[in-house]
Image (cartoon, rainbow, N blue to C red; front, side, top):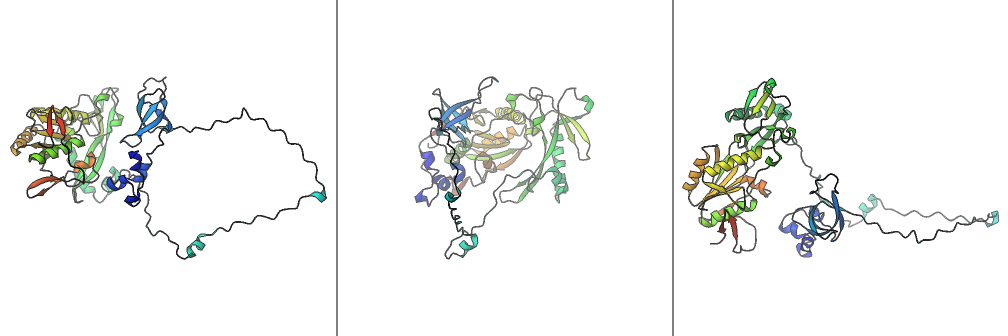
Amino acid sequence: MAYTKNRVPHKTLQGKTPIEVFLQKDPIKERANLRPFGQKVICYDYEVTDKLSARSYEARIIGYTQTFGTYWVRKNDGSYKLAKSPTPVIEEPESDTEDEEEPEPESPEPPVSENEKPVPMAPKRKRNLKNDEYWDSVVGRRSSTRERKPTAKVQAVGADLDHPTDEQARNSPLAAEWAKARIKEREQLEKYGVFTKIDKADIPKGSKIVDTKWVYTIKRKLDGSIEKYKARKVGRGFSQEEGVSYDVDQTFAQMMRPETFKILLVIALHRNWAIRQWDVVAAYLQALLHYDIYISDINENGETEYWKLHKALYGLKQAGHEWYQTLKEILRSAGLERCLGDEGTYVSASGDQIIGTHVDDLIGIAPEESTLDRIEQSIEKTVELEKSGRPTKNRSIKNMGRVEPSPLYHSTKGIMHLEQTKSKPYKRNTSRLSGGYYSLHE
């Protein structure tokens, strides 16, 4: 009931919905998720692996979830399941054709004489439909003056200048900048020993050759100004073969949960701990591969080259997983162990040193700056870090649930405070990190 009411316009909110006012969500999209309670639906069964078994089942909708398009349903056997995008069943009313008697055949009408012919009726008058000119002449008519904007569409690669295609980058006025970016990326691949050039004849017969492409991005600062031109050599991982160049259970990597990120800030600011942020330079290029992968590439001269990869390349199926395994060993050598409740977070045995990971972004908190210095030096023995210092704004928040980058905290009389919207005061609560408990209020 509360889910439905929050998506219905309220008089006290000037005709707006609560989710539109308080959560800034699109009410039209949210209302599209509403379904009648008890609606009969057909649900796809994702757990079925047998080809001969039924892949769908009938159920009735009994509740909503926090995920758009996913509902709680009750199957005919009484069990409950989560169903994604169930298809409604149109129930047609039952017909009683069996009980109805067949209509008797109509008897032919007798011929009508000329004197008894019916008098023709007058034609019906047409409705006087008013045209637009008439209504425009009506005094006091109100018409909308709002400018109608075209419906927003998803932009493809190359539709904006910040993400051009390879052809656009080579023929644009910024071609010189993109050429420098490609040269820098090639030098970085050679620096970290990502590949070895080989002849095509050296590739074993039957091996799948993975080709590459260039991906271009203009990196911008928070104020919108250009920070750098980034060109990245990406492997077309969709052409890899399972079991030959990767394992299906090595296509994922753990990251810090958004809730954990907020808890780390709360702990650090509440206890006045040191906070520091790092970015690992060329993270995936430093992850060792455990499969022989062969690459075909076109160099700046238009010549085709063949590589044997030793380390991960962006775009490969297992690149994220291999980097996570490498990062795990790096942090273990720094005296940190993986958190039990969040595998993207690492904690020291004493519990006062915490590192959160988000792909190649790291954020650390500790009681003293010297402690973070020691962790930083230990990590730099293996990988190169780009040091961001104490984060005042975090661009990676956009990838962790926030729409726009915004200040993380502000200072009042030397005391740090989290930036947050109006909410109820925190109740005494704990969050489990690596077997111990951190209280939001000491």
